[in-house]
Length: 451
Ligand code: TYD
Ligand code: MG
Image (cartoon, rainbow, N blue to C red):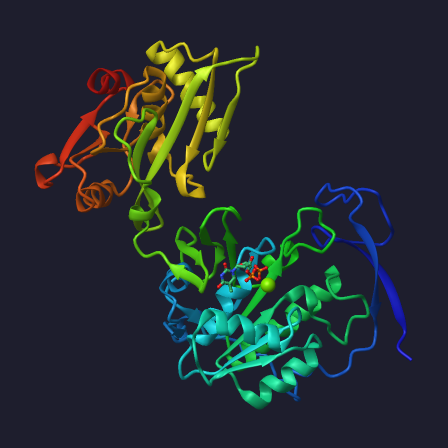
């Protein structure tokens, strides 16, 4: 009989404690520490080769470079976010709220894998449910294998048999390793199963994609503990009621984390949105005030987005400030700049700001468009519908240059805008472009030009 032992783990951050406590001293969460049984016996790990090899020492000069080879999937948005495809032997964690479309995305990738074999392991859905979903997606293939199993050693056994080129696990919270006694979804179980999968990936060179659930309550261990272990952490997000789903890399050992993949959820699966500017700008009504277009960048991809502002007289004593898709502190800062440097009395106004399409933008280059949208709503005067903005606004009301401005200008030109407003400190020659490029120095200049 295995001698079993218990330990206490924080279900939120995975920290380990010798005894129970009310508050995790590591992450500060209350009531997250739970007792978990840890089995002491260690049978042979099924993925590990039998003989324990002597470790090999390399001089860094002697390691052959450029060995990372990638499998290019059919999904261009996923490829872009991964930095050019799935790196062999890498472990990718795909996180996201329930119902956002993680299983749909991965099944779609699996079905489109063409001649390469995929093993899709599901611990959540039955084989017939997966078949139903595949029918809904309407893609036919004979190289996708489905396994409904949660025991890791059985998964590795099947993987040895089938020898897939890609292993998908949906989800990591359902996995169960023989080596740990605690129940699936607990921190020690997730950690052990993942480390087995990482060994599997490194030994066989098969990329592994894990689905990880996120719950706000922390009742299931969030994939936080996993983030350090895996090579790539992808986040699938979006407002459930919006059409668009965004795929971002939070961590990527093989590429940039600045890329954004955009999908649209349709009746037959996720459609890649390869030209986001066209979909993110709603059908424009020329008579509406409070709308402005910003030329922003997501990674290396320029993208035009629409900003909407509503400024109205506050009903209560304390005016409200509310945003979707934009940092509220940044909004407060911009309002203070308008008040102090340009003399607008916004202190008694409610200000609402919305980035259309349900996306979140952190690019400071949208500041100018935000200010313009606010002023347009404040003055109740629509902006001309053929102009867009790309500049940061500083604390003294100066309009500051932004990076990759040529790309932004070219994107605006490509989409048929007539004029783009940028900072006069950006070192570009307006004569190089067909679109009219207006150079601004301060918020005051902007106001005089536009209103
Ligand atoms: P799902 O992939 O099951 O989400 P997750 O695995 O992240 O929990 O997808 C959930 C939603 O997607 C579900 O509410 C239905 C919707 N959906 C579509 O709109 N079209 C489709 O073709 C599919 C397969 C799902
Ligand atoms: Mg799912």
